[in-house]
Length: 148
Image 1 (tube, rainbow, N blue to C red):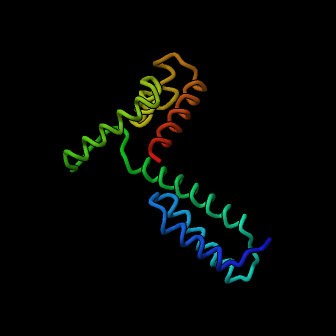
Image 2: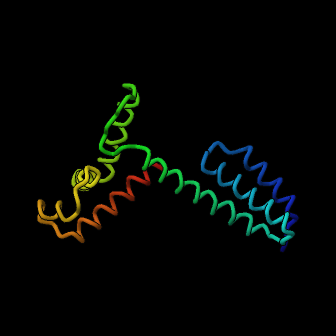
Image 3: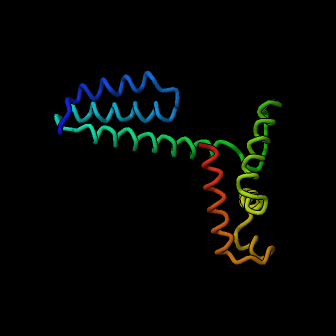
């Protein structure tokens, strides 16, 4: 069943006004842009497609912000020219990451951030490289989930 695209656009506007979640707001705004594009191209679109647009855009925004956050915060903890409050906040975040990953996996991430290769870490710890890869991947996923 095709819905009037302008009705769907108005519904998205009301959703946008009622949300305080930044991810959801960014996703709704992006879905509104996609909806306007489809209106301009005179394509028919139903309510289910609009809902999928919103859900997909919210997910993309959440992943994008997690990646930006992960790349903007130095995991090694160097704080050049930052205030005491920023340094304290970074320490708290690092403690949260360490707690989420576990000390062994967090130490692995720190060593990778310091420039050690998995081969070097494997030689020092005696763990197989494939095990280290799996542990590092799981730890990174946990850190990114916290950052989101």
